[in-house]
Length: 269
Image (cartoon, rainbow, N blue to C red):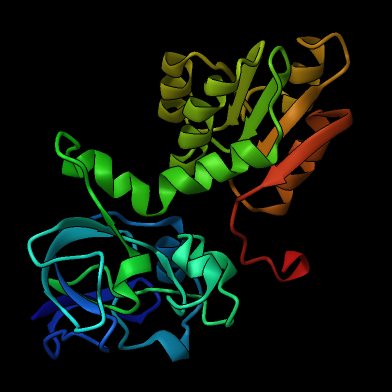
């Protein structure tokens, strides 16, 4: 089968690799129909060479059709249209059985970096695969594999209350998901802070107040529009030190900051 393989700094190649197979009695084989590119994929592509990843398949945001399951799989069946979890666990503990595999009690949590290939060997299929309901498109469903839950987790972590002011620092894909889902909790206003015009345009279309950090001091801009108080709820969705500083700068006294932005900065890891 073909897969997109990491070969070093700014180098990925489509290669023929061994066919994926059901990895264990509780696993499944999924034929990939759609996948997305994660920011962490781009970190690896643009960053220094990671010797440990050379030769590995890229990606962990995929959906597809179940081709085959192991004898211990109970919930998933061949032919199911499924989203593949970006994070998998042991599949046996209470946390995995409750579909919160990031908290796997047996410490087997790992990112399933196999998604940008024609097929995926999925361990612990009953907890690692989610059946996609009829009427949900591939373009919608693929967001559920990583990007939408990540943005939503940031929103939940910020403890948004009705009438509170919200700031999302970093209006990239995850930030856009955070912006859109933040409106579910009834904030009085939502600020979107970024430097990329089309991101800010999209944020404004969603109902946010755009702040172009390349044109104005974003902290001063937020304070000016909140009577000097700042925002009670802040989601940092980029990762670099500069955006983390902005996030703290716009945070109101007693407010809650939720960070989901990934960073490769050694001073912040």
